[in-house]
Length: 336
Image 1 (tube, helix red, strand yellow):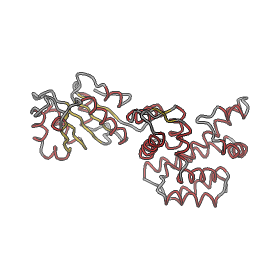
Image 2: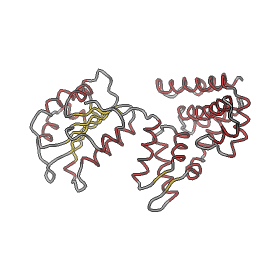
Image 3: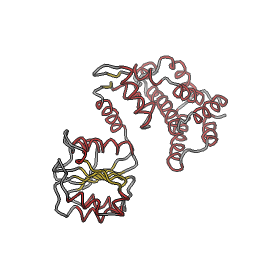
Image 4: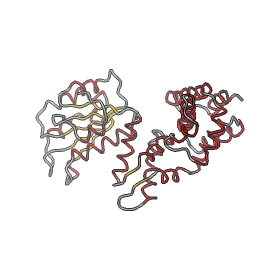
């Protein structure tokens, strides 16, 4: 069967008739979290090492008996096992179709795959089989990313305010490595048995060198300072900051400018429009933000946002584009 919606929610409570779960897609972080959720649900708390069997997809393809033996056998101390196949691919589809029709001991099969296109035989089998669930793990949208972040804090018996989640998304987007790093730091920073993370906590943690340089770059674009852009862009590149992180930072700032511009055009006062921004505008940035509102009409803002979308698409298609290309296209929208 084909599953839509939140993969984590499904893995936390899979349908009773499901014996096989296929997790696939481009979002590796979500797949890993879904695997952990499924293991927590499907394995008893007192499960021993024999209850969780991990197999490599290529090894199973070369030697199908590895899977057939596990599927038909009982565990030493557990009647039911979770058989976890990593790097599963289309080469396993016929074997899986055969194995799941054979008598077994009531085991569960968890398949972890990468991107599977619409013509994938493994994906097609899982979508059609009555006892299988095909669970796509795509890039996060806003609500899914919010739930993911909240779930990460819950794993540590911690909680986080909504404004703090919004700040994390605003500053880091879907960059899983950075998100998980800040999450761990924030829990250590706040401390206690049941820490509650607030917006000021996240703001303080985000003010590190890379974030300062990102802010520096955004301000250089908004102020049309070509020399500052050159230093900031190369500095961020040398520090290992991705071009997607850079374009997201620009998108976030200019989208906020556009939001205030649109609200003031509809009759709202500038002060009221600024007060409605979420997460709130950092007070030290307010004078710069107000100045940029006067310098950037909506038409120019839209050109910056369009350029950011183009650069991000190039990152996803071809990897990190040359710094020179990014700089050239930003200079063009800056009008210098």
